[in-house]
Image (cartoon, rainbow, N blue to C red; front, top):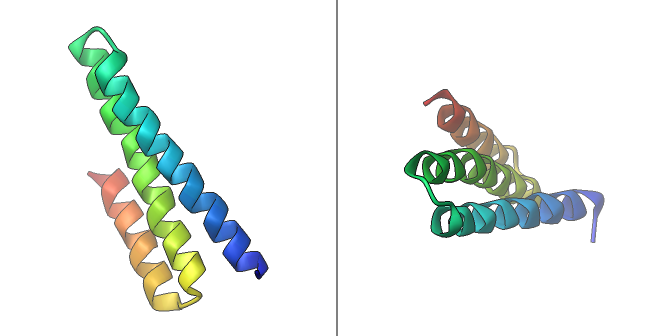
Length: 77
């Protein structure tokens, strides 16, 4: 396992955990505003971490660039 694989694995696991926490927040939070906050903040960062982590694991600039672009467009919208 290389350093890039370890960094990518940490990013993917972190993104998965944040996405799971967002889903839990949608179910648990009592008000609509709190549920929307959980859906947007945690899920956005979770997806960005997943995309960049997969790009790091792939060890190719093409897929890493796609992940960074996806994260930029996600946060831009």
